[in-house]
Image (cartoon, rainbow, N blue to C red; front, side, top):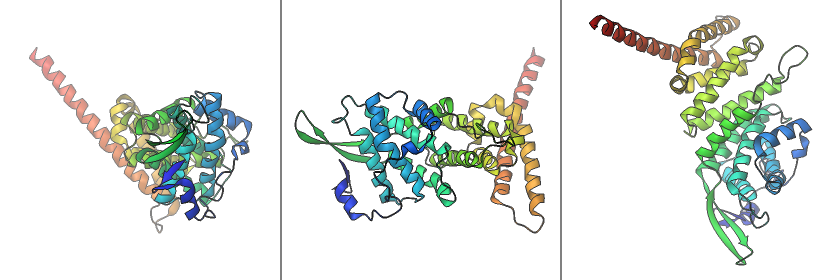
Length: 342
């Protein structure tokens, strides 16, 4: 049993309009909607460390609710997000009475990975509902890390209810989840290609949504430097490694630009050698793309948000490259001075 705003969850739910989009599908179980390959993939990547009992509990109680929230397309208010996360917390961490030996942190870790990884899949929704997923996911995950919930469990030994204040997760688990998804999951939008050798549009959109969630969470300072450098650099490299295929997909270009704007210093610190050897060439390529966008809109049109992002990204790259050149010049001068003194 979860308490929210001083009330039992059931009492609080009674005060809510359950016909709202955020709650309309509470309790339904539609994980079987996914085809076999997606179910196997998410199971292996997100829940491989769980016991069968833990896995059954997570898939039966928690995952269907998360899917319903994403598909509803309703960005929750702060109170609604508290309710949603409290329910997820109760369903995945507070079931030791029904699942003996339950490991709350392990199940929460699996659910956190699922909340992120499933965004990269085709959720069979379109339009504004797809566009709302980053806001929904980042808001719920923010609550998962920043809030605590009172979970009430029945203890069969003492035959009493015991209340525990707990958070669902923390930044350490979040960063571990992200890095494990990068290591184990297939995040590339090019994982399948159509007859024309192009990735499906739904994969491109899902790829953007996944990175949009991470960028939003980073603005809350939840991501470590190593996580940002790893995810950001891999996203940037994926674009330039697949420029011929990615050129038609501005969502991939947007992801690249946003990481260059938001985390250039971090990528520079952790990927110093790669930055030095690739960024000059990559910056020139972004400049060419910027020119193409400008020519396409003509002299009368205003610069698009994407075009402005490319300008900002190229400026961040220039600042980093100029600093690296200055540092190398200082080192060369120092070594030259040492040689002459000898």
